[in-house]
Image 1: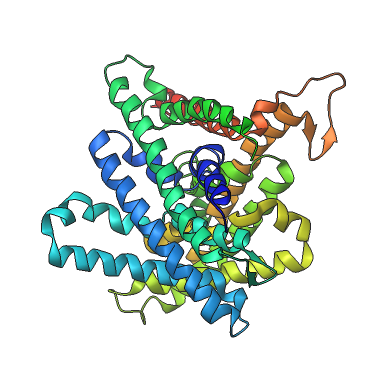
Image 2: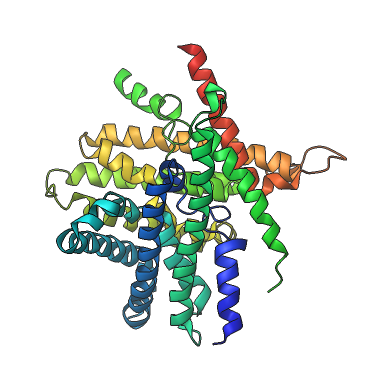
Length: 202
Length: 197
């Protein structure tokens, strides 16, 4: 475990393999909620929180339940159940202790259960930081850090996109590309510019 | 029988999951670099759709309303695991090419969407037809996108070279090409729809 490895994870998760623009995880929410900046920020914060927490939980489940009892093939079922339950739990807790916060991102939380980014990062962690079913040194910290970084990458893409789309409201675009098609074309150009980060040699 | 053919066709054109409903885009874009990958993903998703639609329409009266979504997710995840294991055993190359997008079929909005919107209210036979139509529409969309991307980006068709001296536009094999292709295709779909009405 060293600092260089953490830096590599950060740059690769945020820029080079950006969760949305290069891996296409969480694309549905990205296109649907990026019309204005405020909901986009709420959604990004919620996603960042859930990817971090689910990285922790799924790593523990994988290491101490699935690997231990040799049932790693149940990975998908176990992860999705844990994530769905966790999101539900967070929603209930927030509703109870902080109604303003619940109003701020309450409606986006249930959406996160089916956000591919969350399950995606859990599966990625397992693929990257377990070799032949054994955790590599520092695997837990790498996983959690990757969870945070994927959330950051999601936020970066979301903020850029919502800023662009807010300005596009004042533009006169052809009827047939309004909304979704135009959003995809913008995302394509953004993705092209993110390709510049491929030059990073790590 | 007439009713059922209508159920089948709606998934392909009028309610095409990709271009019209804009569901399940993540795997569509990620795996559509080559036609074989697109076809493999389409078949895998169709299998999961059929299996989960059958089971869900069978258990729809037993499952309490409040916990129906978790129940559906477990059913879907089971079929995804079956698909994953099958793919690992019989086609390891395809499994490697599709990577993490195979387990991600669980969170493909098409599958849960059909379970919630259709299978939980309909008879088994209708659900099967609906799953077939949706799966077919999804596969067609994948083939269309991956066809465009493979021909332009690699200059090949199902792995065979089609034109001599054609310099591939590699950008179409990259993520940004995928986003561009689907953006333009969606624009085309809505243009055609507007013209018709």
